[in-house]
Amino acid sequence: MHEDKGKYRLFIIQDSIKYEMTYSDTILKLKKKPFKFELHLARGFEGTFVSASYEKLYYDTPIKKHFKDWDAIGAKTMVEAKENEDKTLVTSPEYVCFWYYENGKAYRTDPKTRMEDNRIVLTKSIKKIAEQGEDKTYAVSEVSKPLYLVSFYKNFDAPKALDLERKRIKIVFE
Image 1 (cartoon, one colour):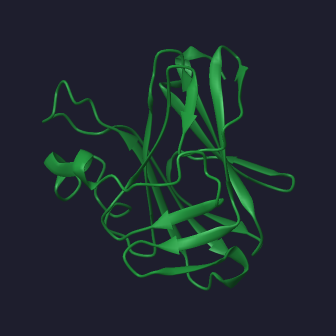
Image 2: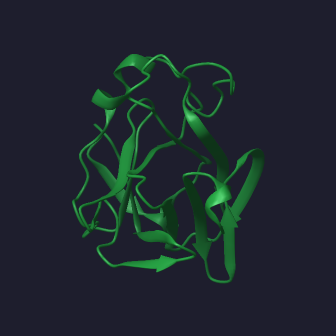
């Protein structure tokens, strides 16, 4: 957990499981109950985009290729509760979330932060899943299909560059 580990690290935590996302074909099995994300940001690094979907659009994009509509990825950022009051993960086949820390405050995650290994640590507790554009929200206990998660960041100063530090995982709820 040092600066040489990149700009950010993203973990999924449930009970005694604390799994770090990397770019892999890993299938993480979680119980059908609340869980949380733990995001570790290097000092001076703002945040990460996260795609959570039941479809594989972002998940299946080859590592050396841009995501579909890469030029508009910033505009495809969904609005979420500022302090994660509803403990909800929003899913979408093509829109993304942005979890970040700015001016001493966490946004789109739980409000409390801490320092660990010279990194700012944010958590995002998840009790419910919402499908963007569908007006459907349900408890994690009701999830019946795999969830494909992809996280990455974009250098807006070099817009044609590929996403950086892409991570992905498939979650199956049992």
